Length: 338
Image (tube, rainbow, N blue to C red; front, side, top):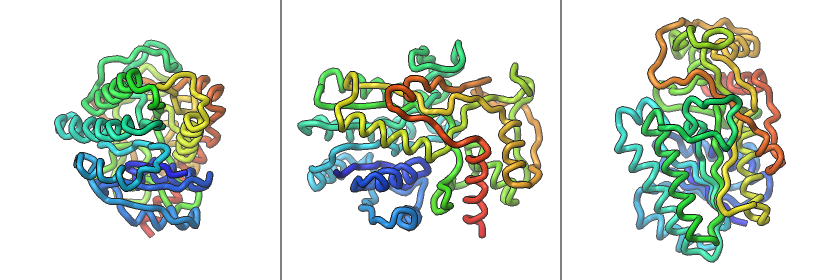
């Protein structure tokens, strides 16, 4: 069975390709390599021993998307990761984010709605909830006004899929709302490798520990939390990748309750920034150079998932601990810099 993974050379995409191959799926990757490298294919092959079909082009080129589906008419499912994802950059370049994250989604859905049946997994985000009224956050929590153009593209993306599914019953789709993916494959063959200055906490931690960054900034210690720092739900990327496979299987086996569903994907546990730092210090046996600085605009106090729905309906549960995740991230960072 042939599955298309867009953005399949990225952090989450590459780990999902590995899990798909481990389950016996034939995988085709589309990636424009704007925030990734073709070298990731070697890492995927080193883990699974299987070849992957890779096509490098930009999904904003509608004619190339159409031509791809003519050649690969036997695609049974699509997992759509391809998108720009830096919150800060989205504030500075909103039109880039609206073009890249929404036009590519529209072009993809246009092709899928022409098929007799289609299965679609969308890479969404817990940013759609904003600062939730209640914690942990369930899928029924209200979608708040987005804090950034990036977050807005995820909200609008979900609306586009929902509206399309209403009028195309042969299209089945699931949006997975991720919390905070971290870590790397235990083999250290693939992991998170941001281009430029990391936008996320853990790669900044590992780059500081290895000497690439002078100091880690902790944005605020006066939040109403256990130690004053922001709380997030950090999920190991391999656990997250496995959630995509079980979500896809749910659609392929017609186990879905409607043709558009939403699931939170997290651990269900919140960890503060300082707790993450101390966990990393324990896992790496290194003291981290960090400094408390002023709050960062747009940061919410706390967000962590209620994963009951994913646990019960998908039969999926996160298994790795925070220590496991940070240990794998450090192993990957050491390999990359060696």
